[in-house]
Amino acid sequence: MIRATIATLSIAAVLTAGCPQQPEQSAAAEPEPVRIAQVDGDTQLAQANPENALPEPTPPLDQIVLPDGFGIHYYASDVPGARSMTFSPGGILYVGTRDEGNVYAVLDRDGDHRAEQVVTIASGLRMPNGVAWRDGSLYVAEVSRILRYDDIDNRLDNPPEPVVVRDDYPTDRAHGWKFIAFGPDGKLYVPVGAPCNICESPGEIYASITRINADGSNREIIARGIRNTVGFDWHPGTGELWFTDNGRDGMGDNIPPDELNRLSEEGLHFGYPYCHGRDVLDPQFGGGRSCDDFTLPEAALGPHVAALGMRFYRGDAFPERYRGGVFIAEHGSWNRTNKIGYRVMYVPIQGSSAVDYEVFAQGWLQGEQNWGRPVDVQELPDGSLLVSDDYAGAIYRIVYAGE
Image (cartoon, rainbow, N blue to C red; front, side):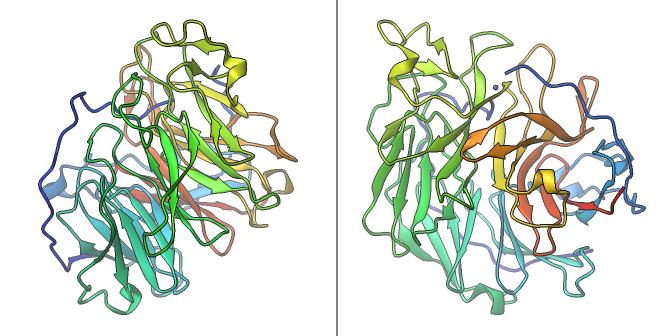
């Protein structure tokens, strides 16, 4: 694979919040692992990139365990820090990063589902985790700014200077990286994490999900009490917003859970910092409160699993039982006694309710050693599923070949 660096952008000074950065994480009992089947014949290794100190070498993908009939191969193996993903109608995959400060265009020109080139279209940005596509332009979320790259599909060799869509989001590093997406209403949804592990927010915009017009105007807060969401999507039937949320640290290995939530109407409060999960009152801020005062999660996920990217499955390439359900990338715990997460989970949905929580893909964690960390999931037009991995600097493609 060819990698090319095209543009370097300078960035405004970084302002650091008073509380330290809290790594991502999240929720309930870990299900039994699914024992599995076939792995795609492509067992190439993701090649290490010396400049970015990627793991060397990445283990073969036959360590990944999937349900019967599924396989996995590398879509791209040289995407340092790969995190949130979005597709343009032209078939170009755009990928954000966090610590690397880069945004990539990942090119599969011949349509064989293996990228030939990774182009760095922007660098020097402040934690440009979020990427979203709208009307020929790529939107990129930094910590405090939303940028727009116009006509980028046609300008990969000479990316334009970005248009600053909005630049007044908080500058806090703690939970400052953002997932962004355009909703069915054509508005851009932008979360703002809590600037701490656990605290009452210093302003109403913290621990919330906001939305703005595509030109940056008319910012609204549509949901509150959300510690740190790094993934959301809209139910394909109801149009309701569903999102992951990462539980707080410091209450032990097994509480609180991470969460999968549903916004059934605007203005709901999801509990943070007073209540976690469905019934865990916070020891510092939960006094005199009841979890019934807040909107409870649709699903309690594993404790500290760091549930990040999530997507409803809209395709028909996977078996019927997966259609309309939610795939969730779990980045994995960072300070739990025994590691948990480092996998892709599946949550079946019936109507507007989550009915289970089960392992779909695992193997990035071997014992207490992990060689990868899933961040986001993205469905391809053919119904296969991409998984980004910022630790291995790779993007995987999961396919169904039949029983």
